[in-house]
Length: 64
Image (cartoon, rainbow, N blue to C red; front, side):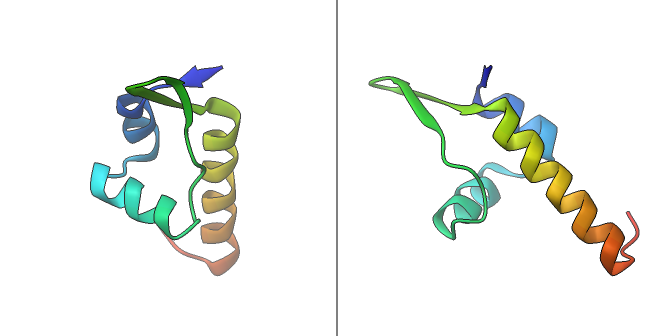
């Protein structure tokens, strides 16, 4: 399933600038182009990124 940017931002609690910075740093999945002016992300990749982030915080003992 593909999800649009506003949904990615809501799911991840990232700002738009943080989202694009993480993509530039290859630390967030890249979107797929669905039309000349429209991109979307694979929901599975975004969910995997969130799961990895949560796991990393648990391992490090971070709270929040």
